[in-house]
Image 1 (cartoon, one colour):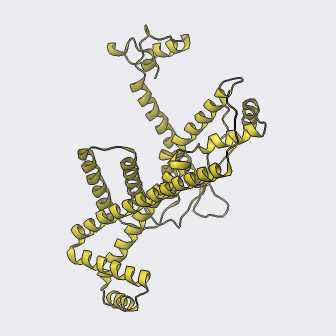
Image 2 (tube, helix red, strand yellow):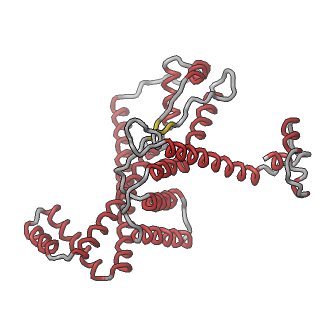
Image 3 (tube, one colour):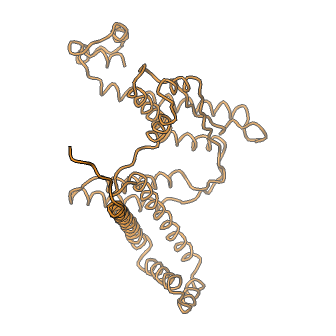
Length: 355
C-alpha cells in the first residue's frame, strides 16, 4: 500500500475555503428564491388590488410604496414630505384600502419568509445538502452518550409528554384567513418541489391568483366576540393538519429507527398525549360552565371519531387484498364474517370486509 500522508495546512485551508464558497453560494441562492417569492406574491396582490379596487387605488398604493422606499433607503427628506402629503390627503375609504393592501402584503411576505426558513432548515450542509432530521440527530446524541435502543424503549414505557393547548381570545384573525394563507404556503411549497410543465405552471399561477383574491375578499379580522365553544372549535381545527397527522407519524418514525438499531423490535409505548385547557379552565373563567364543558367534550370526541372514521374509509379503499393471495389471520377472518357488506365484488376481500 502507498504511504499515507497527513493533509497539509494548505490543503485544509483550500478545503475550508471551498466549503465556505459553497455555503455562501447556497445562501445567495436562498436569498434569490425569497426575493422571487416576495415579488411573485406582491405582483399577484397588486393585480388583485387593481382588479378589485380599480386603477386609482392601485396607483395610490404604488405611489406610497415607491415614496416610502425612497425615504427609508435614501433618507430622502423630500420623499418624506411627499409621503406625509399623500397620507394626510387621503379619505377614510382610501386609508382603509391602503391599510388593507399593505397588511396583506405583510402577511404574504411573512409566508414567503416562512417557506424560505423551511428551505434553509432542510439544507444546511455544503452545497445545500439535506441535513439530518432533529429526531435522527437526537438519537445520534443518545448513542454517543451510551444510551441504546433498549434503554430508550424502557424509558418511553414510563414517560408521558403532554403538550397542553390554551385559548387565545385575543387572536383576532379569522380561521378563514389563516386557511387561505396556508393554501398560499402550500402552493409556494409545491412550486418549489416540483418541476412543472408550462401548463402546470400556468395552472399554479391561476390557483395562486384565486387564493389571493379570496384572501382579499375575506374579512381579515373578526367583527364579533368569540364564545368559549368557538375557541374550542378553533383549537380543534389545528388537530386536522398537525397533531392527528404528525403525532402518529413522529411516533412511527421513532419506532422504526429504534427497531433498526437492533435488539428487541416491536411497538413503541405510547408516551405523547395532547391536552387542552380550552373549554375546561374552570378556575375563574365565568363563561366556562358545566354545560360548556359537556359541549367541549362532545366537540373533542366528535372530532377524533370523525378522523378515525375517515382513516378507516381510506383503508377500505386501499386494502384490496384477496384472501387467496395474502395470508389472513383467523381473527381477521372472524371480523370479516361479521361484516354487513353483502356485495359479491368484495366477498373475497377480507380486509375490506373487516374495515
